[in-house]
Amino acid sequence: MSTFKDNETPIIVLGMHRSGTSLLAGALYNLGIFMGEDQNLMPAQEDVNAKGFWEHEGIVAIHDEIYRVLGSHWSQIAALPDGWVDYEQIAPFRSELLKIITTEFFGKGLWGFKDPRVCRLLPLWHSIFAELGVRPKFILLSRHPFEVAASLTKRDSDLSWGYSLFLWLRHTLEAEEYSKSFDRSWLTYEALNQDWRTEIKRVGQDLNIEWPLSPDSVEVMSEMQELITDGLWHNRAAELIANHTDEWGCTLDLYDTLTEAASENPDSDSLVKRVDAVRRKSKPIANLVDEAYRALQSLYLNQHEILTKLQGENHLLVEQREDFASLNKQLQEENHLLVEQREDFASLNKQLQEENHLLVEQREALANQCEALARQLNSGLIGFIHRLRK
Picture (cartoon, rainbow, N blue to C red):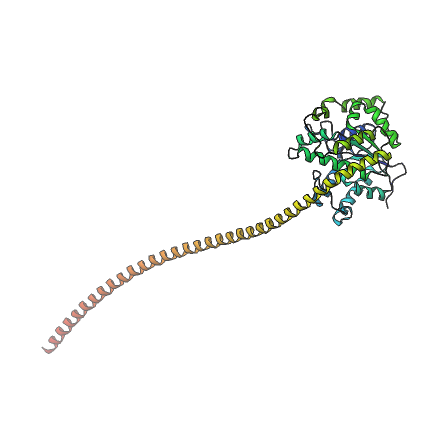
């Protein structure tokens, strides 16, 4: 089993898509946390994350492949299959992730990564951390679910308001569940924007870590001033609450609980009980969603099977049509050849008839000549006989 040095500590950012995880990851990067080689980090996108993602492209690509193999996607609200971590087809992806960590992150001391997909794929990472002999620390970032839903529906027009809220709920509850029993700290997007230095210091205390670069250093403050701008904080909750509702009846309860967790002991019995209460409240909805998804997936698979069969039959028909077209072309070519041969035969027959007619004429002429010669011979012979008698 591979092992890290005693001072190897992974710091993992957990949070739903569009929750400000890029901002938090950027802050960690500025504080000296190794987030991957710069050339391996996803570049900024002006209309999505103008300041950058700080996501390791290799890790994100593998996460997407895992979702694909499981027949899912980051935007899918249904639960992942039971026992998926132990699936045979997942093993190669686990090996690839392990290779990235051991070859690129090994020996960096404090290192970490960020990808919202980890919220739901964390069970796989737990097995990797266990093999490496390291104990991760987690920073769970939450943003008001209305803000997340507004941002998602704007970026991905096929996602509805209610769907986006449930996606936030599922990511958040699974991130909380899978990070239990580990050192963790809760943080809100609002607090990070309003007073990043105080929040980052508190997170350091919660996780019992010392940032490589002090939040009070001129270098870090300059970088953070560049990173945090009011213009990038869109879809404020205060503006959204008046026109939207909590369609599931528990997302706001969970967000309020997590907001308190960011200012109190995140693992106090009372807060854990409140989170579990939200989980129980959302369980019937989640079960209904999963059941509906399985039914739709079964219907899709049946339709896909029928479509595959029809495509196979259509392919056969296309091949038969091509064979018929080829045979028809061959017949046309042979018919054309027969026409040419018939024309050649007619021409030859005409030539033979003409030659035969010529031969008849020549034979008649020859017969006439022979008849004339015979008369001449007879005449000459008669005259010769007369002369002999005299």
